[in-house]
Image (cartoon, rainbow, N blue to C red):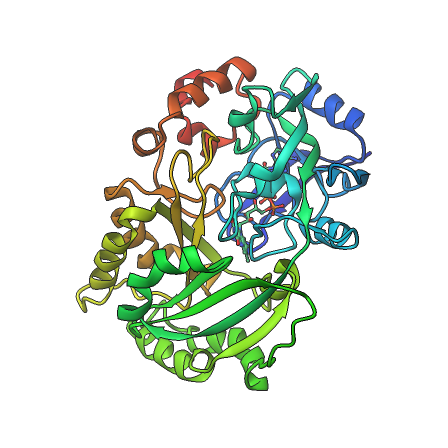
Length: 437
Ligand SMILES: Cc1cc2nc3c(=O)[nH]c(=O)nc-3n(C[C@H](O)[C@H](O)[C@H](O)COP(=O)(O)OP(=O)(O)OC[C@H]3O[C@@H](n4cnc5c(N)ncnc54)[C@H](O)[C@@H]3O)c2cc1C
């Protein structure tokens, strides 16, 4: 095990910085147990790609990215067991080699399994990634290891738990046979795609809408399962489409000074990069997950019941289109769909939901990006929940109103971590544990 002393921890997009006393890079469960046991305050981090202040801020830190082995496959049951520091892309390559898949994936492959599970990471047209976990080992605050299976009640609390109940160690995922998706993409007016959501969710195996604020349009991506040998007319659009992210970066460069220019930039980006159609096929991972990104971002994301999404969407749209409002929003706002589950801190607890992303392409000026505030106000008003890994201002008072199991989770957290070992200042506020520190 490697130990660094008195250094500085910096998040992926450089918006969060902390000094630490000790940083351990661990490679075994035994080392993980040892460090957790002897530390007074500790956080574990993976790829540091969360915008929320959840991965650092304590005297002792564990970098889990070297705890990254694939441990075993069960060919009969289609399961894979890995260490929690494994990068998601490596897990997906390993299961694709077996002709297996996980049927709902986020649009990023560089995150660690532990980071993705802890924050309720999700894709579209399926469940949160953590819902495919059938078994895990977790290191509790006293350094002991607990194995949790689907039969244990605790699993519903642990699946999305921000690393505050303990540190995820080994994880087993249930996989499914791999399938090929026929993907079709193209622009549509808001008046066309919005009323068709429910119909499309019934009809297609994959649905994602990249909403293009200030243009009255969305870019609709559908996917249908097909026989892998089916011939399709592949059309990946003009070659310059690959420059979309660099063009956005240039056009949005001064939008923190002149926010209104965003509306013009979005219209230009729509014309250049979202006005043509595309058609292709591939596995869910190969055909829909972004493999490389030119630059860092700051992200927020809110979730809301599928039934009231159209109302919330119309309210958001009319709010940001008012010229009195400075909430001009960068392209795209990613709209995805998640099936209901039973995990206490899941966005989809008990109901099917829609998730709506909000991106600032200038990570450094994100504090002045009014859109984050407007989207939070509107979604909270309607009972929406924020993505745990992304930027939001809500704390205990607001979260207790939208999470039915909030108090149960807090009680369990206090029982498992009575000295608040796993709480940094941000999480202390989230769980309102200021007087218990
Ligand atoms: C470009 C981009 C695209 C994204 N796309 C999506 C998306 O499509 N869908 C989506 O839902 N999210 C998405 N996210 C959010 C992302 O999935 C989360 O931020 C995820 O937590 C990042 O993983 P990480 O390894 O960087 O975790 P970190 O940021 O390092 O850590 C996140 C949290 O997990 C905890 N943690 C880490 N390892 C463990 C462990 N072993 N046990 C317990 N707790 C642990 C940390 O303490 C921290 O609280 C995206 C983020 C970015 C930057």
